[in-house]
Amino acid sequence: MGNAFIDRMKSLLLAQRQEILNTIAESNKELRKALSETDPKDSADIASDDIDRIMIEALSSQDLKRYQAIESALLRINQGRYGLCAKCGKKIPEERLEAIPYAVLCVECQKSDERKNR
Image 1 (spheres, helix red, strand yellow):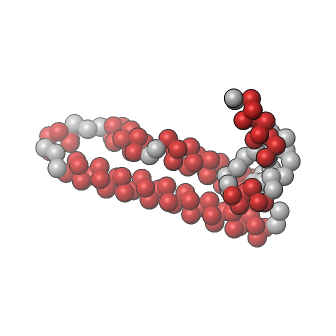
Image 2 (cartoon, rainbow, N blue to C red):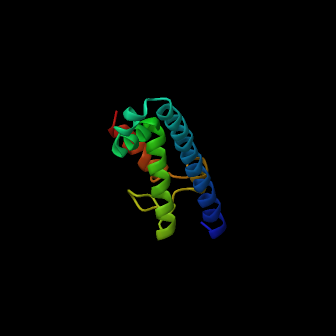
């Protein structure tokens, strides 16, 4: 797996991460709009923890899992472990990484895990 491929995957992962962050930002705009339409006394009572909770809930659980997987993949790139199966240590085929850039398992290990979870 060459540096050009890893650089391309890193760019793709960063773009996917930005897409999720843009979704959060858009949700944040909607939250601010909703807060501006409430009584100022009511909005003053909303703690920042509540706002954080609302923002996390705004993300679907699928987006949150995808965001975490992307962050993990970016960390593996920085550590030089990107493209290696987390279970068996073999190289994950480039075709699989192109389809799922944040994949952590090779096809064989993924299938094995899916069979166990049935």
